[in-house]
Length: 627
Ligand code: XCC
Ligand code: SF4
Image 1: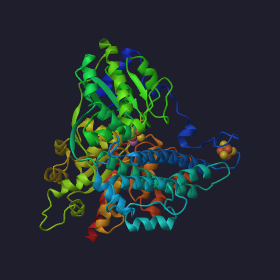
Image 2: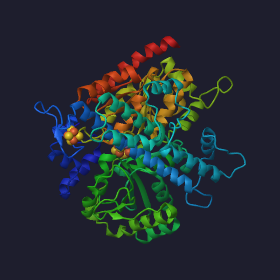
Image 3: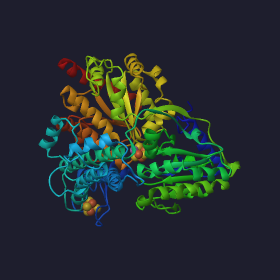
Image 4: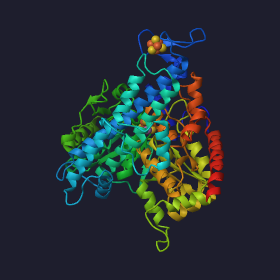
């Protein structure tokens, strides 16, 4: 592989080249010109009040108010957690509102009644003899109350082992209402409040937990109820999924309430006919970032690419519209779309972008709203300039759709129901305790131009599966895997003997796509259930997390709740905390004593894999003594 290439992905490299020919810039050009601020990089710049900004140097070891490097670093870290938890949880809240407006004859319906009833029972909501939509509305209200309830703690899901909850209780970090935790961070980081790194990190941890076991968990469960719990299905990934003779629409962002309606609208006979009328063979939907994950998990919609490829989709010259809602959308798409015929359509009042066409998505009239957005795309087909079109011929096959239910069902295919119960995580737990699988890793998160595109994800994952560590993925990591062929069942040839055997018996790929980033809650559920089945706490399991190319505040919240859930987490990009020695010490060392897990920072994915395997083997020793 050419060292100078910016990605391990052909389609990406080809389009980066096209950008040069076309005379347009991409994230990699801007990266080459950007000189990151060394203060910001270490986390020691404070601009919380206007006596500053204050920066910590050997000559100025304290800010004007007297804040030390650790105080500043910990406050900056906390605010990142708050930003991330807010984004995930507000997404969860929006889905709850959609469930609240669901009705028998409306645009939004209940697709997974069994899951709804299960959740209603868990929340002690009457189900007998009631209309399913009455139950749905009460469940939605209950969920909405988790965001702002004035008293008590968050309602925690039953997959959380008691031992884990006890750890949080002892540390006084059981989350209360979700919004309250975010607001507490904004308050505590105000000038003149928390000035103690230890306490600041406790507050951060509690907030992150309100995301993982609260806002994100709600987002996943209610999305499954509304749009269906994913089951395994086939798809394809990379920019080669764009079609020369079709109206290409890229769906980018996060919330399935929009993308689900677009999926329906794109099948509307009226719009399909319109597409033919304008000279296209049909309408081709392709997803990007977590929206791609949502619609591929539930419909097999093809994946155009991950975070770093969003500009490249426009650069193909073959995309009629990029339709976005919230999160991870480059503002750069607006000026870039001007250089091509692509319509860049924003739909959410939470994420308007200068230069974009704003067509607000109205959830009350969701279907009509989606139809008019799709119509815009179709009518833009005539403006496509064939001289500017280049669709890379790179794509790969993938099997996706591994919700926890889907994994359990798949495992049941090898259970002898005469002897063993079905519908449990027992087979998975058995594989792990027996050592056929050495352990499991959740590899998640973004792309970051500090890392060669997709290299961090793919190198790490290949090493892990080679060593019989089963991998589950979400977010942009899942898409990197889809493009690299790792979600295909025949990727088992890259797995070690134990993992390959399991894959063959159970008929799964060695890397399982579990969904979008809010769906990391699925990973928590699965790990929690295995721990409960074995009657151990989560840190005792040979299970790790990794975010090799992370970049967002959401990833900081995720990393923090994953560690607080008792899962060691490897970061491939250094977080902006190195200027605070106490903060660094807590995150990368002391958390192990309090929470049973900690952060590791290792930019080299092969080295990270080595460390992970070593750690997993250590945990196995203790576990094997027990079983
Ligand atoms: Fe965004 Fe969720 Fe990161 Fe991808 S992985 S770049 S946060 S889309 Ni969540
Ligand atoms: Fe400076 Fe303190 Fe104000 Fe931060 S809060 S800018 S350290 S004076």
